[in-house]
Amino acid sequence: MAEGLTGRVKPSPAEAAGPEAEPGARPGPEVVRAEGLAFGYPGRMVLRGVDLSVRAGELVALIGLNGCGKSTFLKLAAGLLTPSGGRVLLDGDDVTRLPRRTAARRVALLHQSAPTVPGLTVRQLVRQGRYAARGPLGMLREGDDEVTSRALADVGVAAWADRPVDALSGGERQRVRLAMALAQDARVLFLDEPTTYLDLRHQLEVLQTVVRLRAERRLTVVMVLHDLNHAARFADRIVALREGRVAADGPPAEVVTRRLLAEVLGVEGRVGIDSEGGWPVCYPDHPLDPLQLLRNENHIH
Picture 1 (cartoon, rainbow, N blue to C red):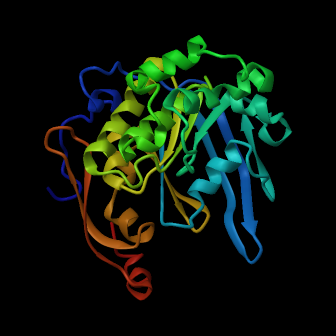
Picture 2 (cartoon, one colour):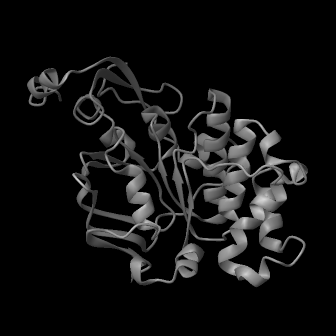
């Protein structure tokens, strides 16, 4: 279907995940707020004055080309980097002024990739997520606490608890890492490219698990995604970054357009509507060179 044709009303992300998911809560109070956020490395600015807020219960997808600042934003918002300008507020508090363990009890960040520790079991890895709550002495105690047990069960990896992590497939390992993030017991979950290196089946499995857990646990989720079709299907809201700035922000039905494909992702393409789900679907055709992009900026609607 051509862009602009109407379809059925888009179901909630929880409904898109499958019949086992409960609808997510309506967005509530603001839990994350970036104000004029800037960050750079010597000779290269990554973020250039980003203003962005996220409300409780939202599922937000960050999209954009490599190097546009998506992962950097998550690290700044989690308190792992210090901004060169502006600030990030977590529940109204400047994250740079929070003790590291306090910030970790408010927001959990699942990094894009992490090295495996040979011989570490699933249970041992997931228990690492309890450090912020239990502290170094608490981590010496044997056995799982209730939060760890729930994290293992909620992601469906309890049966693997005593298996070595390095013996798992990529999709299985990603689910275990998601359980570790849940074990922090934070209300805000940041996911940095959670589907990277996974085949299509495991990509959908991970995303549907995230949507289900968001609804069941009443989480706020911000995730970096490279697949715009996944973002359009599963997210309530898409934020597109281009050259360190917010280029678009809104519901998928409003944000996902030919203009977005060209000006943010640098490709010529078409946008239709899924005939069953009602969400936007992208059909990229070919990459745009910089001169094409400049010529088309004023002609794509």
